[in-house]
Amino acid sequence: MKNKTTSEMIENTEFRIAVNPYNGSIEQLILEKDPEQMNWVLNSTDNPWHLSSMNWGLGYLNLAPKHKPYAGLVRWERPSEISISNNCLDVLYENALFSVNIHRSFCHDGCFSERYEISNKADIGLDIYNLAIYAPFNDNYPDAKICVSRRCNAHIWCGGDVTWVNALRMGGAAPHLGLITRQGSFSEYEISERRIIGNSSNTRGAIGLLADLKTIPVGGKHCIEWIIFPHNGIDFKEKAQDIIKFPLPEAEQYTVTAGDKVRISMDGVGNADSLSLRFKDENIPISSAQGRLEAVWTPSVCGEHKLTLSNQNKTTFLNIQVIDSVIERIRKRADFIVNNQQVNDAGSDMDGAFLIYDNDLKKTYCAKGDYNEGRERIGMGVLLAMVQREYP
Image 1: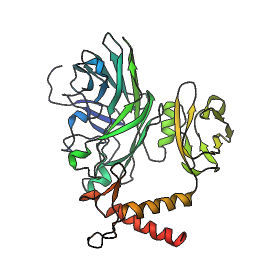
Image 2: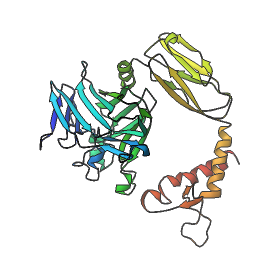
Image 3: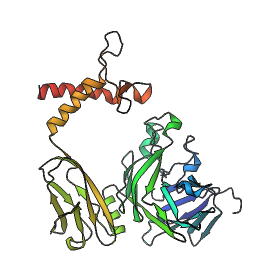
């Protein structure tokens, strides 16, 4: 790769994308019609604490011990080639075991596509513990003025084949940004860099999406594609569904008591005959009325339950928490606070205060900043007072 000092740039009527010439990551993603010209991704220029190794589009494979000397965390961050042609940009990373080819282009409707192709170059199958792709949205709080117009809250759902991010500008003014997967599956995400700045809640950190991938056979490849699009806040779901031609299911309530009815909507895409909704081996009927798809499920057992929605091409899920009784759950929480989180030390300045409780160490914790006896802990006293008043 030739040495360059200026960013590679691709743009259309909706987006302006700048790629770092040294590591091939996206360092600037701007919506052309945004009057604020906000950058929706983290970079180290605007956020000095941010590590360039966690820029947008970089990532890692966590490989099994049999792949020594490449066992463990193997990052892609030094491209062997960056090329641009016809407003499309390709970045290639490679080592002795695998290569990662990223193709960035614009769709016919103006949306922005990123396609990641991970290929096995080894003479044995790749055993993978984790595959992470960094998607660090600009979700942090430097000051109120900047936050309102130039920072976002990134709402993430890793739902298997239907994984999305709804990034909303903190001030609420459109345009906003959406991401939806068209190929590939994610069931988890990770947050990095919080420790660099003292674990402050003012910074979300670098978001990494964790792919559902365990192995790549000899000569095989794994492909992931997501689409990024602008939206006005209200039409996020409609636009995302139209891109993938699959519904984003929603439950009326996600925490219910045993015996309650859970209503699930699957509006906008597909028909009842093409979709299957299941809880384990139980088929949940889907009905259609006035262009809307709906299902009703009545759980009988407490616990966290996964409902899967699928067709021939995609599978996603909803998690429903079933509890025995709302009142009993509130009482148990109040008892836990009193027995574990309230200071009972007449000689202490914190006597009566409420602290964080570490469930692993089985003891309270207090430190400066986000971990003191203030902030959200004040709400514990309010909860206890309400419980005492309503359920003496």
